[in-house]
Image (cartoon, rainbow, N blue to C red; front, side, top):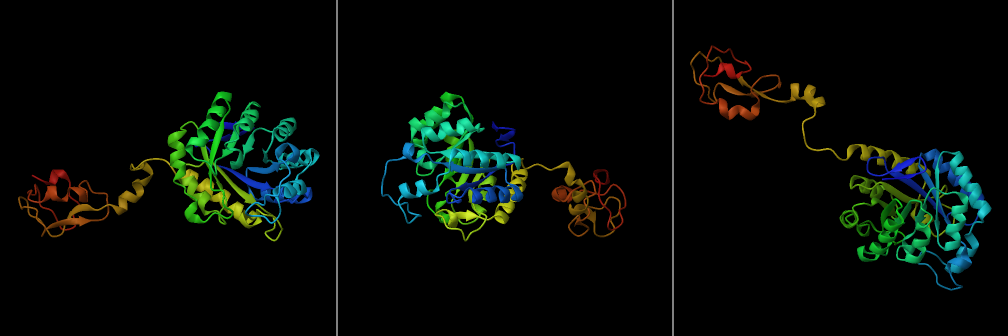
Length: 341
């Protein structure tokens, strides 16, 4: 468990639901502000953007991401927000009662966010094995939520070692970096592997499917952080829009995550609160015909019937057969042990 501001994050608390605005604003701060309002109205806990200081993040290049139609260098220069824009979005989110997070993709981005007074950091899957950057971010002394797409246990372990050495709280989000992710490649079984390898980590899911169902399934498996891309309008342009959920979908995700969290855990024992149902639903041993004193009890004169208010329950029926009655018993009498010789 760790704290993000006043919000506790861990298995004892409802999952932290993160609406990933990311770059769905396409460089337009007004779109980002609308998404903050819509996310707040949907009941999410946290909104997240991405902080790109492009010159410190990458060299000029012509690499085109699989979910885009322009080079990443051009895209990031087009959509990057200024420090003032991010400060205003953070203030707006906090005014709406939301946690604000951002993913820094460089040292300069992390330093900018630190100057804004963020409560913690989100690190994307592409930086999971960028150990120098993780070390720089962890040195800020604040909690880190780390996505682990495109990485296996062996490459995640050094990142975890850095976070442990820094003494910061951390969460590991299982992730598949396909846009969109087919359901059969979500691999929720990875949560158990992460738990076995890193028992001190808070676990979660960063999901790139086109529905909220994998996130809900992850809650049942112990996820404490859920992240999905968010958009106010699915007709907006942007590479992540096809894997983004609308406000009404996020509202259902928040509701479902809380319900499933409340339902998980516990053990298989009889609850005291089940007694009223036991009283009518259980069957007890009863006479099915008059039985004389001293007469043997057989399948012809005793059977099991509701309600469950008798002394001898159906589970003990076989122990009754062959015993003799200590008194005369009318038909439809619930038997007690004192009625048996």
